[in-house]
Length: 268
Image (tube, rainbow, N blue to C red; front, side):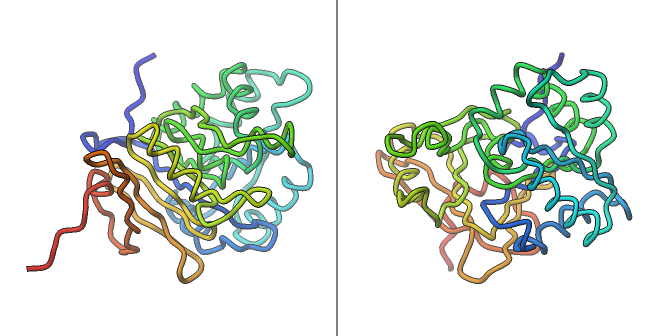
């Protein structure tokens, strides 16, 4: 299989669209403006929205909240893809993903989810969906999965008393490492502080996305969406041995992905 084109600064001709959401309750419709933008990005009046709750152990309650939001409130045709327990029928898995205009991945244990996807070949099906132009999106773990790596609290699911944030490998459709819930905490441990330390160690390109904020990536570029004031997305990188961070603007137009990790031009 040919390598999937990624949303890198030098490659602006990728087919799919990715919307990475930092955090927010779908049950409370906290991300409704972002959700409606996801639907609009499909260009369809009643798009097919597929929910993938692997990271939450295929939670039936989470599925119910997704259907209530995307079907009853937003008017999509919804379905769900359950991958845990018995090994699912590969033909059914492929058909569900191929038919979806939107693939929405829920939050939870990113490490567990990525391991399961790779075991079942779902990772390649997601890349195929990206190639054909589907909108791939999600919150928390559902944001991390599209990037090369993500700042994850997955180890807390195994031992709440003794754990550390880790970097989990994603699908690599977007360059760099992402941190959801950038303005939040897991069991009292701040995400922002730990992600900054991780970036200082690992280098590369980083993106911190606050709760109630999302970032759209497409072949056109990127733009930031938010549902509350004072939240946003933050680009991080190491320059001359020091960590640099800047908050990204919320312009309505798309900006080049390559400009995300460059300082703003100074006014004349």
